[in-house]
Image (cartoon, rainbow, N blue to C red; front, side, top):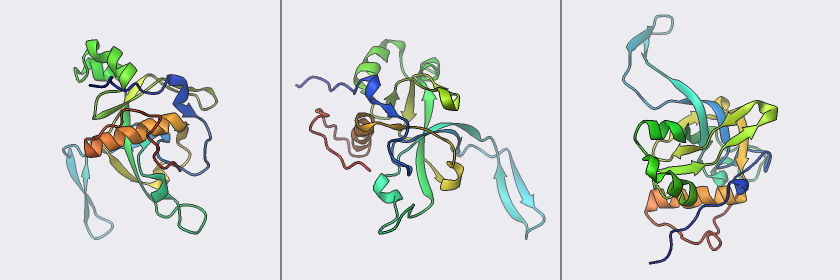
Length: 192
């Protein structure tokens, strides 16, 4: 059996402005993490033909874009092809440990190998000019949220650098297909 593949080093994960348009792996702050929870009430809009809305808790927090970059761009034109974006919530690793989802004894392996199929390990990120700080965290690959592009305007705080984006691609392939490429140096997914 071959050794477990290690993830890229922390220094290889992030960069500020790799590409102008949004791309897969971009990190955003203050994103509606709209996982459907049981509604607290049913609200009826009296002004417009009695439309009904479910009202309940809605949390905001950091999230990572997982829509493929090739799907975002307009074909043969500048800009975006459509406004639909799929993201996954990013939560602090300490919170995951507190909830008992990841055991304290598994943290060293998670940091070294990023070996849990449902999650992607993200090292700490500090962007001083945006007054944004994120402790070491995990992206919840199993919990995608679909939003309109307008929710993300002005909220991007960082992009994954090449090796970080390569790791995201490897994790998504593993999550959706069950196949894990062990050698990141031979794994060459299309980028941007």
